[in-house]
Every structure is written in structure tokens, then in C-alpha cells.
Image (cartoon, rainbow, N blue to C red; front, side, top):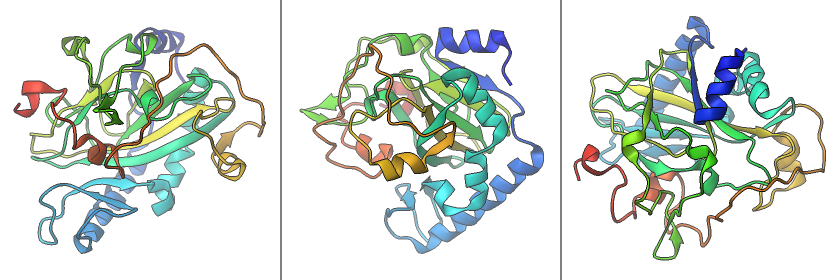
Length: 287
């Protein structure tokens, strides 16, 4: 559980790092299973519904960038999605009724792990209220050297930036009037979790270190936050983790930009961002 000062920190800055949420044996299991999926990716030649591959991937040198819907791929990931310690923390930030609206495992392998351009999750899935956050479970130590999460503090209380280019959604900020120099690093030991608000501006640099950075990401939201792009009742009921099902939504005055027209390339944020004409990360990625 979070102390009040941690809750206040999250409310002020829009993010939080919490050490030691998972036990060492839980981390070891996730590491082992993730290694197994990297081995399975040797048989994959192009992106599909499960595997998102780095450029240069091959059977001899597998480069898995993302495992899609990990909780659907292995029970250990599903157990982590429903981890009581994580849900207890999330409930302190969004309320007792919790559902999830997305999941993925991002792998930044040593020496070549891809960056993620500056963006706000809210741009991808606006809801009737903004009690939404993402929890990143550190399967490895997450450091500046291996491409840790970067967050601009307080940005969750500011406007929603434009994520469009040439009239199409590109999954990255296309405005330049925010100060990336204000970004703060979220560095954690394996077993710790990062938490960031859905409206917080965030991104990450490439992994140029000799150590991997694998981050299991679950998107949680208040049970009465309904997606503005719509959802079927069957899917809605399947994503409830705590609380009672209800057809009532809570509507608050929050800024919204719809992610429409849809991107030219879908499948993952990496694919969507490939059409970006100018990196938001600048010289940090070699521009």
C-alpha cells in the first residue's frame, strides 16, 4: 500500500515509482517465461497478433520488441495483471472499482532496444473521466542507461497535445512547445513498479547498455470510466478486476483529442510512430 506522501507525489507529478512490489521468485518466473517467448520468436518472420519484432530480427538473432496481450499468452502474466499488491495500490489512486483496458510487454534488449517517442496515453484512448493510469512491472532493473521511463512532471494536469501529422494520428506528439529538458527519470530495481497517469507526457530512449530492460505494462482505469470510442458489454465485463459491473459512467470535464483519422500503420505504438517525420527525442536518438 502507498503512504499518503506517495499518493500526494503521484497527484502532483503524475507518476510514481514503487520498489519491491513483486517478490524475487515472481520476478524470476517472469524473466524465465519472457526468455522463452524470445526463443519462440525465432520462428516468426514478421509482426503478427502476438509478436512485434525489432528491425533486423532473424532466427539466428531474435529481436523481440513487444509481446502483445501477454496475459492472454501465459498464466504468469495474467497472475501479475491481477496481483493483489498491485491492485491495492491502483485502488488508492483510481478508486475501489478497477478494470483494465490494455496490456503489453515491451522488451528493450541490450544494445538495440527501440525508443518510444513522447506521447500521452490519453491520446490513444480518451474516456469519460481521466482516472486512468499505466503500471509498469520491472522484469529487470530499469536505469537511465538501458532506457528507463521518462516523464514530464505535472503534464497530466495540462492540455492534451496534438498527436497528428498530415491529418492522421501518429501516436506521438507533433507539437514542439513542451520542454523535454524537464523530464524526470523513473529508475527502479527489478520487482518494482512505475505508475504514470494516462495524461502524463512520457517516452523513453533506446537501450544502449549491455543489460536488458523488459517492462510489463498494464493499463488500469476506474470502473466508471467509459471509453469514448465505445466498447461492447461483453468485453467490458471481461476486463473488470475489482468491484461491481455497472452501466453508469462518470463524466468529468477533461480535455480530449480523438485518435482519428486512424494511423496509417497500426499494430503497436512502434509501428504507428514509424511514419513520424521528426523524432521528438532529438539528438538523444542520433538525429
